[in-house]
Length: 84
Image (cartoon, rainbow, N blue to C red; front, side, top):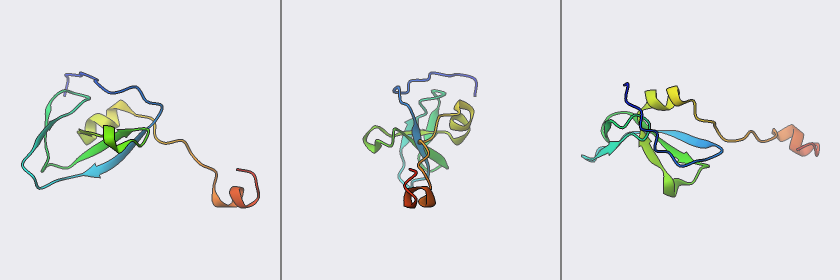
């Protein structure tokens, strides 16, 4: 996939989850601009975890874009010991 349209909202981090649907819908991948069929395996990306702004994208495009994930939170022990 060579064409890149990159029409993503600016965000500090992105949540990514797998998606596949049985409805006969077609989406446009925001990263490459090509069509994406809902019945094919793909991912949902949401800027800063805001699901109202989620977009359907090809898994390969998301991997190539290397979108930043959510910030890491301190682990359970750090929180229990007051370090987080």
